[in-house]
View 1: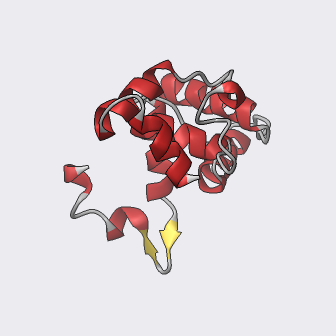
View 2 (view 1 turned 90 degrees about the horizontal axis):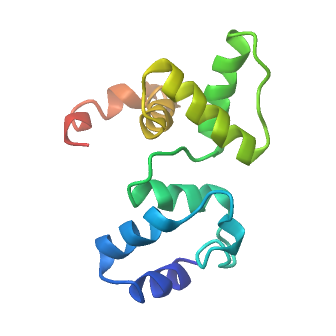
Length: 131
């Protein structure tokens, strides 16, 4: 999957510019028809992650992000969202309503989760300013 993705991106340009060029034109709604979305092993989570790495302001519906966002929704007396596409749209809506960019909300969910006995935010605090 990684080789096929890299192979496709190499037809567009060099490393960073190829990823950015692809991501800027990659559509969430038509992800299965996208050249990268069609690669065996690329699911919607990976597809969204690659779009984010290419500069698209969105979220990936992985289990940690879904857990945190759905907990927030439940505390706000809203229904949790399990469908990936619906979740992405809802998480983007929540982010914008709260004054954050969707990508910021996505990464924040990772930072509030524990890694072993230490919360990731504390574990990575010395490098957060560099990110």
